[in-house]
Length: 64
Image (cartoon, rainbow, N blue to C red; front, side, top):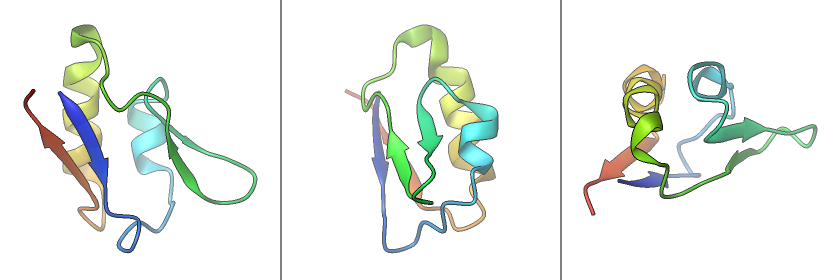
């Protein structure tokens, strides 16, 4: 799995971080950071949920 974020859409509201903190982080500068673009298999379910719950649908996932 590869995580892609459209930063033009992203509002850095931290919904994804609440669901998958091992993959997403909103820092003190109020920007979203992807901690691992290729998360391990044991995180895939949470990353999928984070993408689905993104209010702006800024997160897309690719199968690799």
